[in-house]
Image (tube, rainbow, N blue to C red; front, side, top):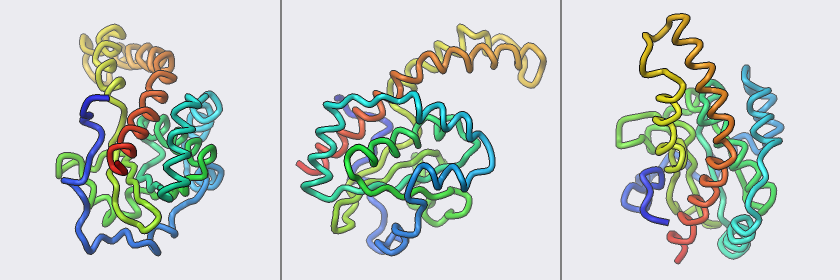
Length: 208
């Protein structure tokens, strides 16, 4: 995989005195089921992404080997209103279940100090942000928002749905957004697969 704009490596590591200590990490929500109990909306959408996701088992096997060898664990920062979180959080949870990776989930707006260490381009509170550590809680890298495949395809979907041709917050806009959302579901499987592939590549590079 070529260098990804969604994958952040050691040069952007958090400070040595990071607020994400091993103890703080352990305080996060540990499972998809518990996340579903904690959120206030979009449960059906989260569940659909979770239920429909069928991970590439070669990628899963590779990640599992790194989990077993290096104790890889992951922290995810998210919110229940964000479409990228609807897609990305279920992927990480399924990876954790299938590989034995320890996963902890944090609400962004309840943990602003954590989010502040992983701002997108040093400015944006982008979610999901997934941060990886080894068994000794050494930072490995982090992944932001969505896969490069999704970044590349979203503008084409917006154009095809007519979202670029109507004024926002009008009936025409709502109709275009409905078409956009339908088409996004058709691409969701490929975007989930790309997310797993990018996570695998991030870990391979960090641990090599």
